[in-house]
Each structure stands twice: as C-alpha cells, then as structure tokens.
Length: 264
Image 1 (cartoon, one colour):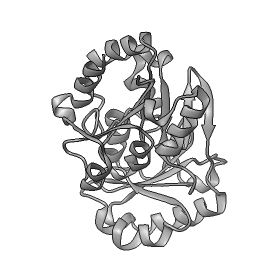
Image 2 (cartoon, rainbow, N blue to C red; image 1 turned 45 degrees about the horizontal axis):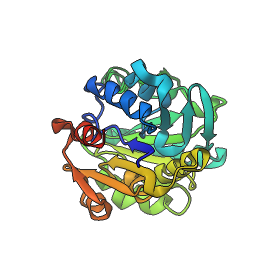
Image 3 (cartoon, helix red, strand yellow; image 1 turned 45 degrees about the vertical axis):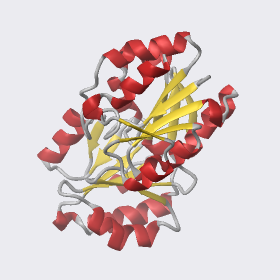
C-alpha cells in the first residue's frame, strides 16, 4: 500500500521552467487522497511557484520547496532551514564575479526570490516561466533576509563552471547540487529532498516501503533513495537511473501521470 507519493517538477513532471502541467493530474491526486495516499511536490523551485502550479488542489497536498529547505502544508510551515549569514555573504560576493559570463544570482527566502540583475530576459524566465515571486534590489546583502537557498543561473549551461570551480570549492561547506542544465543550487549542508521526505514520513508515520518517488536529476537522489518504489524518468541523468527501481516515461509522455494511474 503506497501512502506517500513525491515527485520532482522540472524535467520530471513538466518541461524545465514551464507551468504547462496536464490538469488531469489534479483529479488523479484527489482520487489517490481518497484512497489514503498523500501527494507531495518536491522541487528546487520556491514555494509560491509550486503552489501556483497546483493551485486547484493546493489545500490537499504537501509542498517540498527549495530542494527540501522549506516544507509547507495547508499554510503550515513544517520545516525551514536558514543559511549562515556569513556564508551567504561570501557566496554572493563570489557569484558577482561571474557576471561577465552572464551567470545570474538568485537569493531565496520562503516567499520571495531576490535578484540584483536588471536583465529583462532573465526576469522573464523567473516570472513568466517559473512563475516566481521576484524582487529586484541593488544589493541583496543590504536586505535583512532569512536566506534558505542561493541559486546561480546560466542560460547556455552552468555545468563547466559548476564542475571545475564552484562545486569543488563549496561542497564541504554547503549542499551544492545541479538542478537542471542551467541551475546550480546552494543550501545548508543538512538540506536534501531525501531529508525532507523523511521529515514527512516521520510526521505521518509512513515507512520507506509505503513511499513512491519520481525524479530526473542529481538533486533527486536522496528522495528516490528514501522511497521503496523509486522512478527515474526516461530522460533522467544516468546517476539517477542507476539507483532507481523503475524507469517511467518522460514529461513528454506524461510518465508520472501514467504511473499514478497504474497505482490507482
């Protein structure tokens, strides 16, 4: 009996940076709820973005936002992990040094994402693509923020900078994960989608064997490892496929929806 289902969003359920979700999934989630299964959306996105995506049923599910740094259910904050302010300052200053390479900084709080750039194309990606709450400021370090995640974005791919510079430097001090080809995310070392899933499992007395999870990228490894029934989508990174119990169709094939229908 599956009692908890968690799925990644970008690259798993929808195209990266898209709000184009098959509305049929809302009915399926509600049917699963009637049968005793809780649904959780687990994403590197901010909470308001995920909530908008699932607006018709947002009162009937759990939100794992910012790669597990923030968990919310029916307006109740279940978990929040703030980053150390001195580390935030150091990372922000370093990120500014990559501006000439068109690498953009975002600083996340539970309800809003802060940027320093005035680049209109990037702003459009954040607001009209991801449907984030965004505030442009001249200096994020002058704002009094409870920072839960810092992310860096590069439209033509961030992997080279990530693998050669940023991940080696920061991985012993922060949790650093690729969240798609364009994004590199930094959180407190304790943060992980798998830990977030474990928090929910403990709160609801649900076992690993009673949990199902779907993902496509490195930041989903912990989540799939904490689920007895784990699915990597067909377009997932090979590292994730290696630890997944099953392979599901990609978002182009409504793979997650198909497996949820099978479960019903």
